[in-house]
Every structure is written in structure tokens, then in C-alpha cells.
Length: 513
Image (cartoon, rainbow, N blue to C red; front, side, top):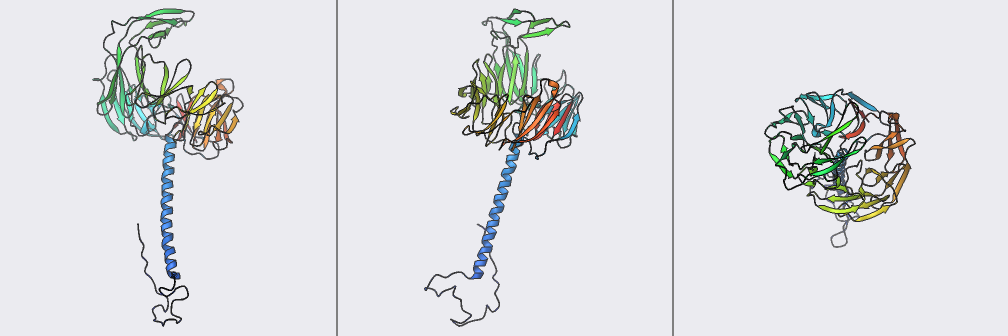
């Protein structure tokens, strides 16, 4: 503990000697030792108040600093969360800037933020001004980052991984300032028919057919629907696939798995390629070597005849060929969820791929969050909203609400919607906090975002796709409508990157704020 010393300054006449009992002796506020409890003099009391005030000031400053640090952390969590926006003012948003990108493609580039790919050049878009902050020539046939709009985009600290070249594929790794962290030729990793894509955390993911078809496995017959009829086609046994994730800077293999070929059964899957001629007549061919791989939404996705499967970024197999689940998504509470079966069932998976719990109903992925821990998982089951504990699947509460989407899930409320209504609920009890009707003419919700205090919803208008798009803000605490912006073009979609609300279309991007 820090101590403070004070130099005592004598008052006028303080140094004079006095006789006991005279005017110069201690007054009635003090007593002779043994005759009572002495009280401090006014001067000493004043000094103690000064010292105590300094301690209080230090404590208050520490609390203020701690509060400022926590506020900064909460703001960082907000803009890194799905659909998280930097706090807005109370006025309706305006178009801050617009950038035309004819022939270009916009991607989310981790530490590089919003990135424009144009011919052989990679450029970072300054979210504050819309200007190109830096540009770097990389190569032809560019493929970088992930598509703008994926809810679980690349981590904000991840470097930007770019693939280039037609015959001689090469990977280039860039930091947020456009500096090259490394380059790696892929000739030694790719075989004929192999596929490659930017992967997680500065890596590339590769997939290639390996081995020989199994003689023990029989071929299968599947039904292919054509324009006017269906036709039975024979799918022979194909080869398995090896999936690898390689460090894009060092070339070190982080993990690899071999996926066995599984005949598709009644489903055509990826085994039949369809074609149409100029007159619209359809034809098809069987392709048991079809294969693509990509990394999106926090999951490595392998597609191809008999080998469709999913892996976590760490190499855990989350879905094997023949698995009936309709996809797997990571959740902020940890692990993953998948939906399977004709009667919808939600499976929660741990990070190692084991099933943590299973529950009837369809998991409702929150369109946006404020970055706080989510205490409940919400399911839609038989026209009711069901809340379960994300750790063990234990049912916490139910509500007679036919929810179709979770618009925002924050610390103190969760907002769900059906075709006609929105409801805000207490996530711990299920109690309705407020409800509103959907705006007149709104066809459906096409996106939701939050700045921590408001829900910002994108809705499609009218009966036709040309009727435009509407932005509406509601106060999360009360449900009161804060503002409405009508007449926005529907030629594009809305996405949040680094706290900025962007409208991305073919050849253009606009920031609202």
C-alpha cells in the first residue's frame, strides 16, 4: 500500500511554551492521558481527510479505467460478433460512400478487412472513406478470403490467403497492410483433378481423389429427374478423397484425413452433371470423380460424388458421407450444431465432434449478437419456441410463439420473428418483453444487425423483387421504432464487416451509417 507523508507547518505562536491550564494548552478537545479518550486535533483531522480523499481519488480513477477497459472489450466483442455494428446515432442512417467495382469481386479478408479482387490485383477498401487504401499485384485467376456475408467469417486477426495462377497454382499470404508474409508454389501438393481453396488461419485446404475403387462394393442405380420424366442411371463405385490443410507460409501439413467413398443411395448427390442445350433440352452424365473443397462459415466443406463431408478448422470430422444432417455450423457457446432427419432434430457437437446432446426441433441461428455469452439455444419445434441449455440440452422454457428466425440475441433480450410479428423475450425466463407487428408491405426479413442498443432489420418490400428494400431500427429495450429508411435498392445484400454496415451488389458496394 502506498503511504503519504505531510510536512506539518506550525501555526502562529505554536512553538511557545505554556503553562498547564493556560490559554496555550490543549483545549477541551483533548484530555490528560488516563482521564479519557483523546480526540484528534482539527489540524490532524484535516490532514487525514486530505489523505483519505487522495485514496478515494485513486480508487475512483482505477474503477474508471477498469470500466473504460471493459467498455473497450465489449465494443471489440460487438464488432467481431455476427451482425455486430459500431454504435449508431439516433438519426436514420445515410449513404456514407459508394464504390463502383465493375468486373471486381469483394471478399472478407480477415486482418485486411474488406478486400477488392480485380483482375490480378488485390486492394483493401478503407471502410471510413471507401478509398482503396493499398493495392498489390498478385496474379491471375485470383481467389482470396471468404465471401462477404458469411456469418462466421474469417477471424479479424487472420492473414489474407490468396490463390493465383491457372496451371501453376501459387498461394500468397498478405498481412493487413498488404505486405507479403510468404509465397508457396502448390505444384508439389496438387495432382490432376485436385481442388484447393483458401483455408483457416493462414492456410490452404486441398482435396484429391486417392486409391482405387473397391471391388467389393456394388454399383448403384439412382433416379434422375429430367424435364418431362425421370430416368434411372447407374453410378459405379468411385474413389475416396484425401483432405489436407497446409500452412500457406511454411508448407507444413497441419492435418489430413482420408474420406471413403459411399454410394449415394436414392439421392443423386454430386454424381450426376446436368446440361441444357440452346433449346432447353436437358441431358446428363455420371461423374464419380467430381470434387470441390472450400472453407466457409468456420467449416471445411468437401463436395463430390460419394464423399460429401464436413470438417472443423482443426480437422475434426463433423459429417461423413451418408450422414443425413443438413449441414453443421459453429456456435458461440462452443462446438457446433447440426439439423438432421425428416422430423427435424438438432444435434449439438463438442469441438471433438462427439454429440453433446440431441433435441427435437430446428436450431435457430441468431442473425446477430452483441458478442456476449449466449445463455440459451433456441429451437423451433411444432410451432413453439423452445429454449435449452447449450451445455447439456436441458429444456429451460417454452413459449407459444411460431418463431421462424432469431433476429438478435443479446445479453438481456432475444428478438425472434415470424412472418407477421416480432417478439422480444427475456432469454432466462421466456417472458415477453415487447412485441410489434411487421411493417406494412414487408415480405420477409433478409438480414438483421445490432449496435448493442438497437435491432436493425433488413426487409424486402411489396409483392415484386423490384419493390425495394427497407431498413428499420427498433430499440432493444422497449421495441419502439427508432427510424425507417425506405426505397433502398434490392440489387445486393447487406453485411457487417468490422462494425460497418455494407450493401454489396454486383459491381458496387455502399456503406451506410
